[in-house]
Each structure stands twice: as C-alpha cells, then as structure tokens.
Length: 535
Image (cartoon, rainbow, N blue to C red; front, side, top):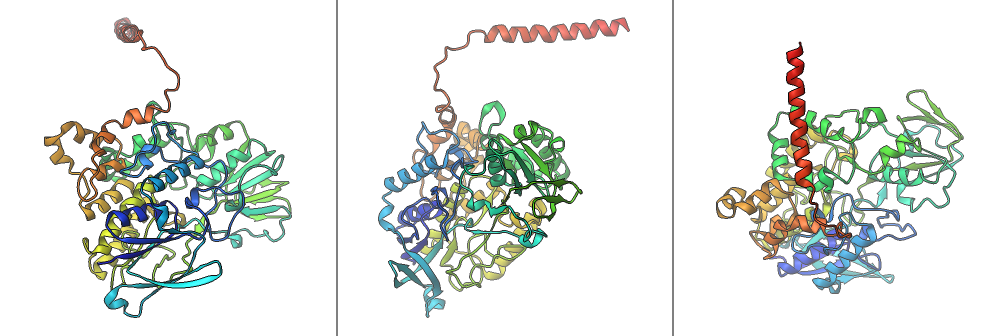
C-alpha cells in the first residue's frame, strides 16, 4: 500500500490532492517552486518562468456553487463569479481549514521524477528537487503531477508570414497584465478563446481600435442565463445531460445552435463557428457582443500575411497601422521533470487512462491531476480525480489491464473528436457530468437517483433536474459529508444571497399582473374569433 506521496505543485489541483491524501491516511509532501499557494489563480505583476500567469482582471467563468470543493462550500457572501483575488482567498481558507500548509515545501523545484531501481515490484519513484541551490533526492511510493498546463506558451509564428518584418510589438497573452501602456493603439488579437475575448474587450476601452482574428469562430455565452441565474447552474443538469446523450446528433446540434443564438445571432457578428455543430467549449464573455456592436472591436478572418505595419487577411482585406499583436494562441503541454515516455501528449490525443494514468506502467503509482478541460468547472473535476487516484495508490481501487486502458483511451479520443473536433486546442476537452460520474463510479460515490426517488423523492428531483454540483458526490461512498444533502437543497439561497444587497418589500401586484395577462389572452382569442367571422 502506498504511503509517501509526492505532490508536484500547490495550485488548486495540488491543494485538493493534499487533502485527499490526508483523508486517505497517506503521507503527502508537496513541492511548490514559488513562495505561495494558488498556482494559476495567484496574480503577480511580473511574468515568471515556469509558472502560470494571468491578467489582473481575470474573473472565473464558472459559478461558485459549481466550482467549490464537495465538502467545503464557499462563503455565502462571496459573489457568484469570483475575481481571481477572491478565488485565491477561498483557497487560503481551504488550506487553513484542513491544515495543508504544513505539507508544502515552498521555493522547491522538482528537477526529475524517475522510476526507482525496483519499480517493477515496489512502484516507487525517485524525486530530485532543488531549493536554495541545494539538490535533494527522496523516494516516494506514489506521485501526483499537479503542475498544470498553462505554463509554456504556444506561438505559431511560422503560420504568420512576414512576422519578421513587423515593426510593432507582439507577445503572447501570457505576458498581458493590464491595458496600461497600450492606450490609443491599434491592436490585433489572434485567437477567439476566453483569454482573447477578455483581453480584446478590456483593451478596446482604451485602444484606438481592436481587431480579433479567428480561423474558426466560436459560440459566445454570457455568465447570466435563464432568470438571471449563472449559466452553468442552468446548463449542467443530469436531465439536460441525458437529453444531449440520447437525442439524435442532428437534433442535439440544432438545439445547441438555437440555444447559443438566443442572446444574439452569431452570424451577424462574424462569430459563428465554422463547424457550428461541434460542441466546442463556448467563450464566456459578457461584453464582447456589445463591444462589436459599437465598433470598438472588429472581427476578422485568419491572418494571411503581415507587413511592417499592416495585417492582410485571407478574405483580402487589409488593416493598416497595426501597433501591437497579442497572440492568444494557447499553450503546449510540458512536464520537463518527467521522462517523455511517461506522459504522452501527442498531436491527436493524450495517452492517459481517463486523462490521469499512464497505461503502460507496471504499477499504477503516478497520476496527473487537472490535465483536462471539462465543459464545466475544473475544481470539482480535479477533486474527484484526486479522490480516485489516492484510493488507487492505497490498493482500494484497481485499474484494468494495459490493453483495456489503451482501448478506452482510443475510444474516448474518437468520441472527443466527434463531439469537439480535431483542433489541438480541444485535445483535453471532455463532457462534464459524464466524466464526473465515471470518476465517482470508480470510488463508489456516484449518487443512485432511482433508488433515491423511493427513499427521498425531493432530493432525487433536485439531483436530476437541478444543477449537478460537487455536493452530489458526497452523499454516498467513501468520504461522505453530512452537510451534502442540505447544501444541495439550499443551493438556490446560496446563489441569491450575495445578490440581495437591497431589501425589497414583497410585491403585492402579482395577482393584478396575472389577471391582466389572462384578460389580454382572452382579448386576443376574442379578436381572432371575430376576425375569422369577418372573413
């Protein structure tokens, strides 16, 4: 049974992995190369090598009730979508609550993770670290790789002929922090993901003109959905997930298009996806359509060529006097401390069983946590991954044969391509609820809605038709939390609590307005009747 576990990174995946190790009675040691926790979500003014970087204005795209850890709700006064500083505050509260800081060795870089000489029998790893210019080596029974995948920027300069002639400034979105210094500029943003949209809308408030260049287009959603609730509260329900799974593909994709175009017609704004029937991750941005509407942002096709001061696009149009180009072109995966054969991230697929375990190891004692892009919050996803991994390390859960795992990897990749496409940016994409349920099934934590329908119908209805939050995976199985049921049943008030900052008297005109609607409907019916009589 595994005892000593090395956790690499103290971001969100590392913190929740530490807690899961402690919950399972394991002995974790976390190596964090910087001086603090938070990983990607800890903003710093300067970009640091080997560390994820965000801009100052970053706000979460998933709501707090869908993003919190399964046995630790966010404070009720926290807003539904959090500024990065607020989310970091939650991580600090979480770390203090479960006394996790004592397991972390800060300013310690992992140099290498190699199989121990007797790995085939022991499954142990030799981990070499460096701190204060001193190297140390230690043996661990298992390793959890939690270093993230937003570190090494991908800048495909070879796809932009003439970039060497361009006299302006260009940089990757990783370098962007705030709009200061870019006032009055003509700026071209390459890409149409969440970062590209955020940066473009922020810059457009101070720039002379902002252009967004996109090859494929994208669906764009706001954070606000039906009746003002957060989008993921409405979108991620078991009922809706079931519909997406059982309906014929043509109907499902037609429904997707109708839903996405409810806010605005994407074709009119030049944003409609090239293959609009793919279920790619939509851009979450509340401002992009309005900024396009009043001309602060102009959407352009792929860049064909660059000159000293201009951009030529594939439709033949030219934009002159470009001062700055921001490449929001994503990241490449890099694990410099691992041997290349351990974690294979290839052009078309990730060769990890359920995005976690290398299938070819004699012993399943290494797991990647958070190396995934679910169509929902990464936080509950990483938590369930960590809960499963720690139980695999203890021998309480077992993995199938290498042959079975490889077959699953290939099948999962084929399904991913069918749903999300072949684009490299979608290589880690997966359905949200299906993936969570699959992980929960491995540890016996998936709720049985049918049996609950007989025992507790009110809860069963909430589970099936309400938002699929992380609390659902604490109702049963290992790590049950007594507060899970209450958290599920009271979720609505937790969503509304931070919104109700102005006391209002209960409305008394509802019966009158309802009566007026009835009268209006009757009037329409009567009018139609007399019109038919007239003809």
